[in-house]
Image (cartoon, rainbow, N blue to C red; front, side, top):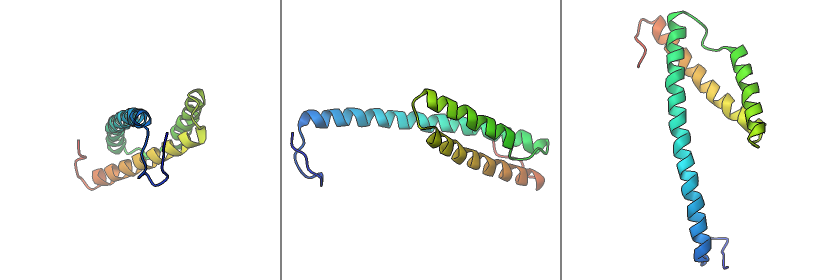
Amino acid sequence: MTTSKTGTGAVDPEVRRELERLRDSIDNIDAAVVHLLAERFKATQQVGRLKAVHQLPPADPAREARQIDRLRRLAENAKLDPAFAEKFLNFIIAEVIRHHERIAEDAANGQQPDD
């Protein structure tokens, strides 16, 4: 097998096929993740609208802590670094809270939330 650190050298065709197969799998997983996140955000938008109508706070620290604990356990069982899983969920939670704050602000200003 011949390789090059610059990527310009010849690569064994078998290695290239395996690399392409693995990358195709990664691409499929990435697409699934994007679609799952889209579905998750559709649900959290509905939560945000419900919270706005009932004047509930955008953030729910107790729920967030339970979700982080739950996700860390799931990550451990899946052999995924729990710290990474927590960072990922914290990123999502921050975005959800931002959406909920915007929805609450819109509702307070008499605007109908987007569906």
